Length: 115
Ligand SMILES: [Zn+2]
Ligand SMILES: [Zn+2]
Image (cartoon, rainbow, N blue to C red; front, top):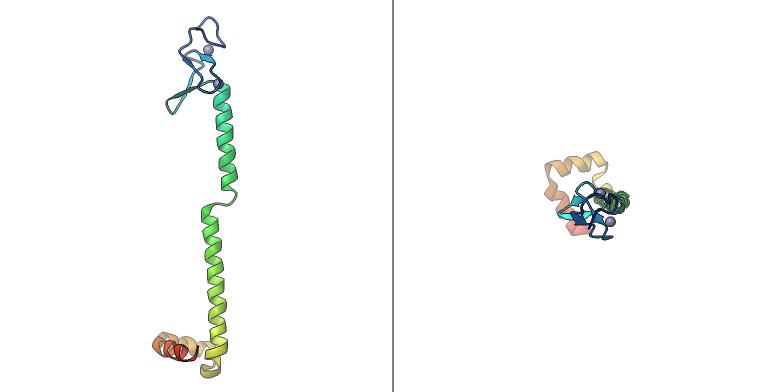
């Protein structure tokens, strides 16, 4: 059998997708398998299409958004705890922060007794 494109050349392989006979020049070896040029192109296009689609929303971006949401929720929750429980007893946020730095157990004890 001779090459599909070059009738004067002897075929050395056949494309695993379309079965076309390929000479040494036409044969494209990818991951140990033989492809013709057009099937290799199609394969490559499909793969790069998938990567582009997959990159639309990367895992990293999703994790980042999730972290931001968690941080926002934590900020709101700690603000609410401060406003409802701490502010009436300890006054300004600065005061609460100072107590938190010097004696965090006092705040934890206070909160666990009140919430
Ligand atoms: Zn082919
Ligand atoms: Zn050929």
